[in-house]
Image (cartoon, rainbow, N blue to C red; front, side, top):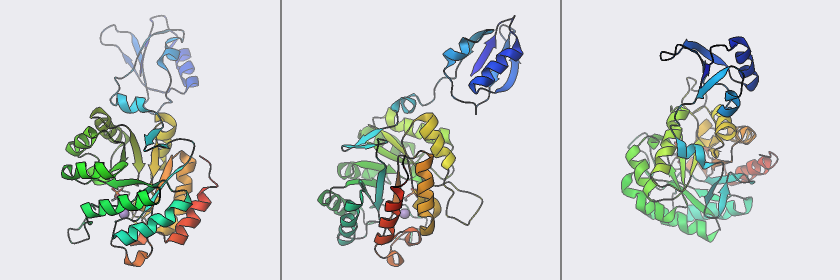
Amino acid sequence: MIVSLREDADQQSVKQELAALGLWIAQVERSLGTGGIQLVVAAHSTVVDPRLVAQIAGVCSVSVPIPQHPQMDQQGPQVMVAGHAIGGSKVTLMCGPCSVESPEQIDAIAARLAPLGVSFLRGGAFKPRSSPYNFQGHGDPALAWMREAATKHGLRVVTEVLSEHDVSAVAELADLIQIGSRNMQNFALLKRVGRVGKPVLLKRAMSATMEEWLLAGEYLLHHGSSGVVLCERGIRSFDPSTRNLVDLTAVALLAHVHHLPVIVDPSHGTGRRDLILPLARAALAAGAAGVMIETHDDPGRALSDGPQALRGDELAAVLHALKQVSP
Ligand code: PEP
Ligand code: MN
């Protein structure tokens, strides 16, 4: 925001009134056109209606930057997915295995998730793996196994689409289409997913800025997605003690300043099953609309991400403990 002062303005008193609104001045400049004084508001100031600023004595005009992601700014905190409001009054729980391994596995997991208040069955049919020698997912058949298990147990499906080639198949069977971290800025994929008009769970790339993340969401809405739910899944940090670093500052900023729905994934965020509960609690306290948590009946034999998977009984205990954190 740039605040232009009248010639007779008392710069100190304008600055004090701006500070009282939570606006801090990064720079004082002279306008190249009029020669008048301009106060450049620091980017980290509070979000304030420019009309309030224009009313301060001595202020001549206020200019605000052109919004870069107008549709994300307009979307609001709630996204409807197959009759469920993400960002509504209830915390949204998305649980399931990292990978869909077999029809029996996904059915058994879905059966025990349903009574725990879980709304979404998660699981990857197409897996983005760092090594080409690791399990890559069962593909199309896994989508069908997952849909069947979810429908049978009254759950919705959230699953990742890895390539443009699979968008139709995933869109047909998923309620919420997941774009994974590694694809957050795959613009061709974002456009293609947008065109199917379904809601999307957009995971943050490992080193994406907030602005890049919001712009990726803007791609989806611009091309037709019915809603974008953001997912904080941990960013790369300098410290290898945990797999990633869950950025709760981003969660608070999205929830309380941008008023957008954000789901936190403490499984990928920490990579450690013993940290899932504290991070999930912190996420809800920071304003998250829900959490995504990986579970497996036998984590030691999981085809992917075993170390971060909770067994069924452990997941039930975590979800029970989370009920005590009110959004
Ligand atoms: C996942 O949710 O299965 C996954 C691969 O997550 P991410 O894209 O956050 O690594
Ligand atoms: Mn995983």
